[in-house]
Amino acid sequence: MGRNKGVISLAEKQKIILKAVLEGKTQRQIAREMKISRTTIARYFKDYEKAKSGLMESDDIKLKEEIVSCPKYNSSARKKQKLNDEIIEKIQYFLKENEEKKATGRSKQQKKKIDILEALHDEGYDIGYTTVCNAVIDIEQKKREAFIRQQYSWGDSAEFDWGEVKLIISGKLKIIQMGAFTTAKGNYRYADLYYSQKMENFLYLHAEFFESAGGVYREIVYDNLKTAVAKFVGKYEKKPTDELLKLSIYYNFKFRFCNTERPNEKGHVEKSIEYIRRRVFSKRDVFSSMDEAREYLREELKKLNLKGQTLENGRSAISMLQEEKGYLLPLPPKYDSARICERRVNKYSTVEIDSSFYSVPDSFVGQFVFVKIYPEKIIAYYKENEIAEHRRKYGLSEWSLDIDHYRQTFLKKPGALANSVALLQATPKIKEIYSKYYIGCEKDFIGLLEIIAANGLDKVSRAIDKLESINPAGINTEKIKMIVQRNDVKVIKFINKKDSQIESYSKDILANYAAILNFSCSKEVKVI
Image (cartoon, rainbow, N blue to C red):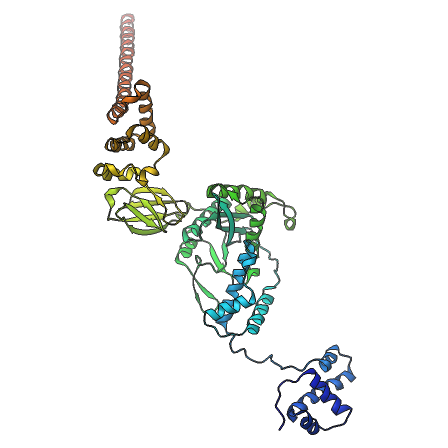
């Protein structure tokens, strides 16, 4: 019995054809000699005869290739058993990760096909290397879709997306998140930098973009962002986040989500992220602070928006925006983009926000407070009253302490002042006053903090300067307090004295007017 071979080699195909054509052997004889199933012999010889017959009727190049090509399975209708939607989604994730690494200068850290295979195996998927290779090829081929130029009306649409930028901030390499808007009609670009893609940054970017544009676009287009998409409902439908719904209601814009892995549905902003990153940060990527990097980005965007555009008859994005403003929806008061949370004040009189700590007055230890978190600041409230404000920290376990928040504690424990983080983070002037006049006199320094809280640091500094000009060795809290209060009394006395003089002059003037009036009346009576 001959072996039932599904696919034979090209050499075996050649032998079958030659034995049949040149030697005149039957299919049964060929099958017996080559030990191949007669059914297989019959199928290949039938295909050969069919192609040969067709070639005699028409000079078809495909028939020529079919005659001489290697035998192969017809696998077009065969279902792929192990390559399911879940694995395809995983492979798409790895490929997108590669694109992000390439865009941020980490090309050597991209996953090759064998690395993707191993990553899938590590996650428990049973799949072969060839299947992974074919899947990657299919996905990459599908990405090569045409970008069809659209015709937009004024005020119709703007697009938003996040992208990464690698910058050196304060001597350290950091991966910074850049959020970017691009208008569909005029290619006006707005972008800003943040340490994360958190919700407050997402909302703040929208409020700033609308302020920059001078109005609201009727539709905003998004990719599948976590801050925009709460979850997937089915294969294509997406449920928006509550925060996006609130933002949409407030500004009255519609929103639309792109399909997964379809950048041609949102072509403007995909290119804008790359364009801004290349045009702005290829020239400079080292900054002393995040504020400096953000200011540099703003100035460079002004230049880019002033450049003439080839596809817009040489018009700049900023000139087109000026025309478009008349078609935008009205701009309401700026949206409060804060993320709000409730926190208990710990024993250090601080609240923890995103792994950093911020002080509140020490009388609130153990209490629950509400915190509004903005991209650049945090504000704490107790029963709707503001009790503290700090500049936002972005490091791990960083502390922002206001020395004024610890006055009551330092009165009880003055020895804790000298090495406290609160003193270390105080303003340079307060630290200078402490080191020059109050080392060893911490309790008096706490009293000085109360005077500063009541009267301001500038007034206290002037009082110290006055005392130092008289007797540098005789500076203490009581003398500072006396000078600050005496200046207030002088002002009050001066004002009172000034008011008395005005009152006296007014009385004299009124008396003179009365005398003149009396004199006039008496003369008139005599004439009559």
